[in-house]
Image 1 (cartoon, rainbow, N blue to C red):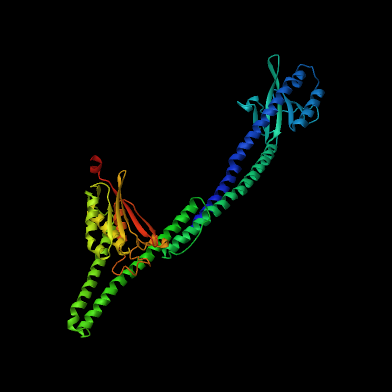
Image 2 (tube, rainbow, N blue to C red):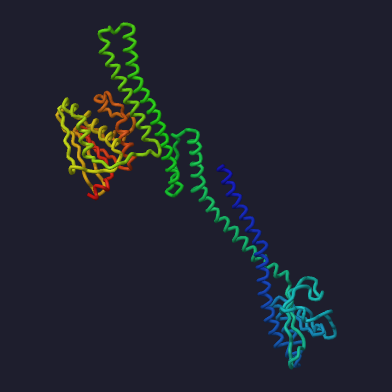
Length: 474
């Protein structure tokens, strides 16, 4: 396809060159010839009028002899490179600059008539059959005492006009050739700046279409072509990453399902073959029950993510008090905090703070973040939950003083099943989906979720919600 496109361009270039030469050969040639002929006819007619008003008039007025006028006409012929006649209205040639003076010789132009020029002052042809080649002939009347006594006729070979025309055309052809040679610069520029990058982009798209999303290519250009190449490369990288994430997702799901299933299968087989005595059934059935609860939690989390990722997801928006939701969530962790000797400090703006959002999903967001904060905080520490009112937004901050998140791992914490190296020892029962669900819920509300963390110091999650219009009215 790309070769065809380039060949089309070359073909168009050659076709343009061909028609350009054709136009010069036909139209420009005729225009040049007519222009040269018109200029020559004008020049000859001026000379013919000058002769008619001077030497020829003097000759008919007997103020000049035939010899003297013949001498002047011969000189004029040399100057003009043209034959000069003085001819009677009847068609007799009195003087011919190209022949010696012979008064006894009578040369007649059969059929001569001054109307041969019609509405012009010149004519083309063999001049009533006198010449063997085509001539450009101009006629100027010789008048005396208000009568036409004769005519001054100047003949110029048309072949010489053709020769002059060819000379100008040769110059035009040379200029046209130079122009096309210079235009090759445009073709070379197009090849290097457009065609070569386009060929690389096309080859890359073919590689991507065949599934090779890791194919790398580069176009060193800062124009639209370079931007297109960079965008295509970035897109392929994102797709490749998505494919890697998908493989990782499947592997993580398989691992998280296989571990509890293996545990459940092992305990049940041990109970059936008698390895585990009946008096210990209750203990190991509790373990099996915990593993099933873990599978149920994992399944529910996956279903939640699937629903959140569904295009066009509808939120059950309503106006509710975010402060009360925070109090309710904090109350659910009372027992957990008592066991770890931890406190949840609520710094809430006002008694009520109305927001417009999906209450159930926002409650899940606060629960997930608070659960992580408690899980990764040290004993005798404080979890701080704060609300802030800024313009038409309510910002919720959940801050802990736990183990923190390494800087190079911050960008991965919202990925599905991701667990940082620092959290693996503490998050035995986690699915690695809580923060992914949190992110999807906040983005579904078209709001922002940010995280600030320092390893060994603590982590703070901040998200925004749309302030209720009822709050503004109050």
